Image 1 (cartoon, rainbow, N blue to C red):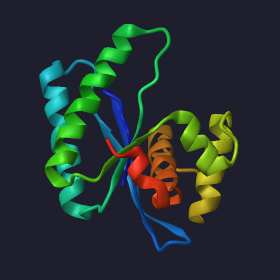
Image 2 (image 1 turned 90 degrees about the vertical axis):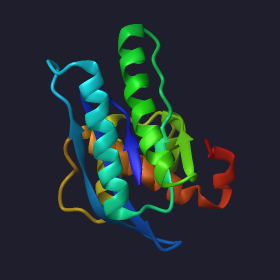
Image 3 (image 1 turned 45 degrees about the horizontal axis):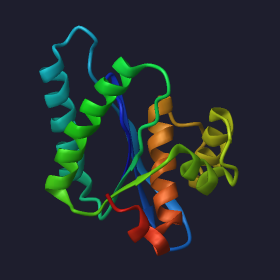
Length: 160
């Protein structure tokens, strides 16, 4: 399972990997409304990730590492959401992994500076989908899961 952390929208993507090919099982996003108090938003994300872990029982869970260069307030909020998700995931499994945006782009598109459209097209192609997954956060989460599948031989290097 791949997770794209966010406070308002947390994308998730669940794939299976047979050692050669990835297949999409499910994807979507956990949404928290802006007017909801922060503790309630974090609890909602925690509960949502818990429910996904119970439903899919993923062997491994991968997450995009946070990278912010400008907006500290946004970085803190996303970090809090990421923490709530990480606790829920850790209650399910110790097999947690993280990848930088550049590592994900390299693994999925073959180019560490691929743009969002290129990444979405590659996710669609690699999973044999008819359409690009929406919302964007779900496509990003699927890309994270694909990255982890392709990195499985060296996965110990990315364990959190």
